[in-house]
Length: 265
Length: 289
Image 1: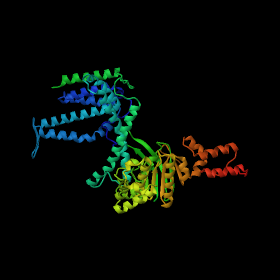
Image 2: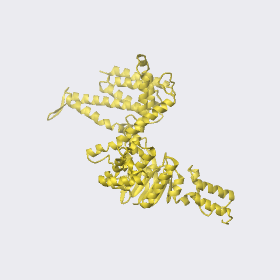
Image 3: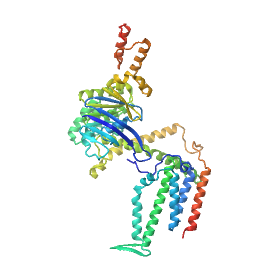
Image 4: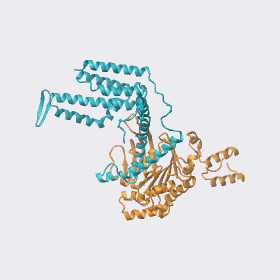
């Protein structure tokens, strides 16, 4: 069912991106989101595009799969493009058709903004495609560590995140299973009038809720039985390691950023 | 209703990096009125085979013939309801599918989806609740107030109430105590005989397969490894043991006896009674080859 959807999915492989420390990846993504807004002419966008595709290539995830998985957000990008196309009235008039007037600035703005959008989504997908949810939360916990000083519940937040991420696939499996069982009892989830399709959700949701509550309770008991009592003094099984690779990636990123600042107009 | 699989292949999440081949080149015929058992390890593809039997999954290659319907990869299937009604599937841990406020409503849910009137559905509920060995009073209770074993039976009743011609069971006794297991297996066997159902049982238990099934299909790594009657299958248990599959205790004991005495018994025994008789005969000195 969720066959081709890639947002939030992890593809196991052994690539440079997979081997990077989640902290460096998180910092990189955060900075990348900032510098996307630095680009303002074809050359700088070209550099960003090149950088992103090099990263995608380094991830060893087939490019066709990544792009195929971005289809659901494609219409958003197209929508952004069209919006800018018609609403920006800047530069020379390119053509006119009834009410619609397309200006040069609109084409430019539309292309840049949708390109920006595309780059952001592609880059963040690369993060989740090459980093397990657990690594991401581990990385976040460390990066947000300083906030503990102002009594921000960093550990609890990270734990909540990792638990919910951990149970997404389980929940999907469960949904799939119950859907199949109810399909076998004559429920039609995929066709028929809207009203019956909405009604068909009840036999799916009730069992899902019940099993989720049960699972949450079991998890709480299991955690307590194994002596969980919060983040205080808790050691880590997975140690994060900052290697030469991370430093190189950061340096490469700095070079890209500097070039962007030099070439922007 | 006959069901037949012809060179069926199924890949999960085809055309993604997550693609996995679950079954390949699987050809099995399930003729009307027969009791089939499908056995294999976890991951051998038996549950995937099962989901083809009422077109929940469409084969990525090959043909599934269900009655007079043909299901292939090519065309989208419409109006599968008739198939779904005639082939009832009891999934693993069927109690997870319960959702209604009362047991009665839950049992009526299936039949009413297939267009049975409420009155008739309630009648079916009363009938099937007795068939699964629960008292009629339970109909007015909430399914979530019942014990695990009772919930299982209610869920089974929900499938039986659809009055299917073919009953497909996916490890229906998983997680039950030995007595519950036997009762449920006996109940299915009785229904199989009384209603002249086709039954297809997916199980880990060689004992159950040997006791009830007319034919046994052994699955291994997504393929059919062996198919035949219990006698044929257990005539050469070495292969099974090599696959790491369990052989019924009776068969194992018979092997030991034959080895110790250096004699072959006249037949492959599948029940304790048969084996006792054979060994008595042997000890009495009846000379057999």
